[in-house]
Length: 242
Image (spheres, rainbow, N blue to C red):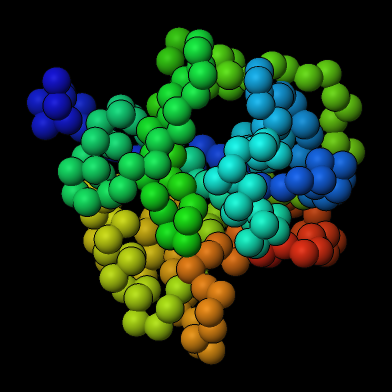
């Protein structure tokens, strides 16, 4: 059955998680704890970890995957993938491929979920994740829960946007390109999902060689932390601001 014959149209609903690459787990864990994230699960067979703060999720990829290692070696700690929660994720993926998207699916091992995805900007991936069905999600299948102490602070309510720095005269075209691939209403400002999360493109004023990567992750602060500065991450290719 194709997407065109479904009673309910496949659609992108919102942000599911942000995935970053890192090598020093002690360092990145300390940083995420300061932001209020708690390590809750580990992948069953890979050095991939799930951190949560309420419903907000960050996955840390510290595996020996060659693509992830190459990405880390080029940029350091950086955003590697953006996962979007979908209704009928497989059909959202096939629609994007039909419209010219490049396949970059995550092909897992036996008894694990294969996550469909396409090539994003700057070597990132855009993954498509189905909503939990019968209270069963990808995390229940691919991850094992850990008994870790909860972070003592809560600084972030949710992620609100990611911003890519891109070459001059590319922001408008990239915005329309991604809106079409995801089946979203077209406008010239940003790619906005149903939950309000935005993917933005800002043209590089200096036209430097190091562009086409996520350089800002915007967040909505928790009420109790708005007067506190957000901790910074040294040697990182992105900044968390809010």
